[in-house]
Length: 447
Image 1 (cartoon, helix red, strand yellow):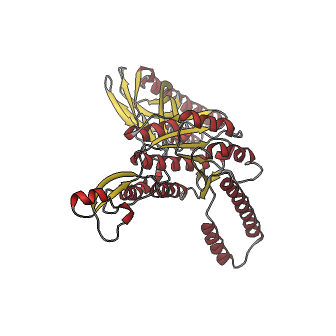
Image 2 (tube, rainbow, N blue to C red; image 1 turned 45 degrees about the vertical axis):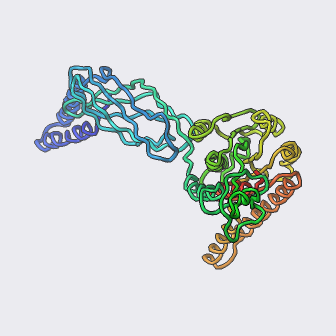
C-alpha cells in the first residue's frame, strides 16, 4: 500500500472542524473527539480507496529493448503494460534499471483500461560500457479518491549491451581520402619500396622515371609508366593493455576507453585498405579477442568484444601477451601496443619482452597521456594571466608534469632502442595520430 499527498491535505483540512468546535465553546474532550473522528474518517477513506484501486498483480509486463546501444547516446526503451483486471488502472511506474543506465528519476504516469495494453517509453542514456540490467518494474495504482493505493514490484528482467561510442569516427573520412590517394583511386600515383604493381598509363611530365616500363613503351610507341598501390593482405595486430595502468583517468574518461577509440579508428582504416586486423585485449589473461573477421563485419565484432571489458588492477604479463600475438598470426606486418609505459622502473618487464616482437614486425607503442605539452603550456599561461602570479600549486603541478614527461621520454627512448616506435598523445589526439602513422608506413612501402 502507498499514500499520496492528498492524504496529507485531507488530514490538514481537519483543522477546520476542530477550530469550529473550539470556537463554539466545546470542551477540550470534544475538540479531541472531533480530531479523532476526522482521522478515523480519513483512514476509512484510505481503506476504501485501496480496496477500489486496481490490483497491480493483475498486470503483465513486457519490454521492448534494443539489442545494443552506444555509450552516452539516448536509447529508447518501452514497457508494455497489460491490465487483466476488472478495474481501470491509474497510477505510476518506475523501471528498475541500474543507475548507470541513465533512466529518468521521475515516475511515469500510467492509465490502462481493463483488458487493454498500453506502451510507455523509458528513455535511457547509458554512462558506461558493458551489459546493463533491470530486474523489475515498480507499479503503483491509485484509488478513485487519489488518497492511497496499492504498490507491487513485478519481476520483469531485461538487459542492454552498451558499446563503445567510437567518437573518433569523425576522423575516418579524411583518412580514407588519403588512403584512396595512396591506392591510386585519384590522379596521384605513389611508388614506394615493396608496393604492388597496379596498372600502366602514359608518362606525364614530373613522373618518377624509375617507373617507366620500357617493354610496354616499345610495344605502345609512347612512354608508358607503371603505377603502384600499397600492398594489401597485411596482418595488423592491435593489443590493448587492460592491466592497472588502463584504469588511470585521462581527460573525461579512463585510459582504456581512449585506447579503444584508437583501436577502432585504426581497424576501420586498415580494413578499408585491404589488411587483416586482429584484436587482443590482455592483462594476465585474454579479456577479448577478434580474429579472422574482415570486411563489414569487423567493426561490429570489435565493439561487441570491447563492450564488457574493464581495467583490472593487476600488472600485465607481457611475455604471455606476446605469446598470444604469435598465436593470432605467424606473420604480422604491424603490431600496435596500446599501453601506458610512463615509468622506467615499471616498464622493465615490458621492455625486456618487446624485442621478441620487434624482430618479426614493425611495432608501434601508443600511449594516452593526460595532455599534450602544447595544451599544458596554454592552460598554464591562461592560469598565470588570470591569477597574475604563479602559485605554489602551479609550481608543484608543473614539476609533476615535467617529471612525468621526462620519465615518458626515457621509456620512449628505450622502446626505440628495442626496435619499436613510441607514440604518445592526448585522448583526443592519439586515434588520428596512429591512423596517420599507419598511412605513412603504407606510403613508404614499409607495410
